[in-house]
Length: 158
Image 1 (cartoon, one colour):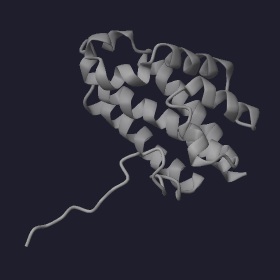
Image 2 (cartoon, one colour):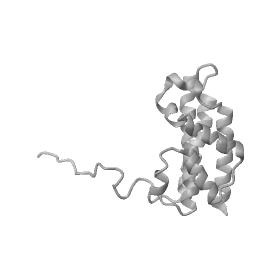
Image 3 (cartoon, helix red, strand yellow):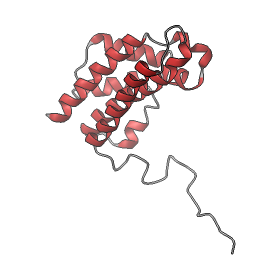
């Protein structure tokens, strides 16, 4: 007997349901909290001062948590998963919309997210070990995550 693989729609943009479509804002926030805890754990347990490559996993988890906190807030505000996916890791654009619909964050965090988008830190953290030293200072990244985390949880609990 020959096993035949099932046929799949390979166009992920049109495939329904798209992963995450059924998740609630609270579920996304809970997942995000896990990424944020992972970033802090990696920073404490894996990252080594003077060895920037050891911090790349910290950045990846941290940046993922920023994106997902914005997703959780936007989904909570009634935006569809498809609309949110359309930002393609543009934190400045997703933050602009989030602030327009009520997210309250400080100006330094907004400026930092715009800088992260301009410098493509999400892509650098995933694929560019040669650019590890060009990422935001870890303390700035963590302050931004803390700010967005708090603002998102306040909005979701209201």
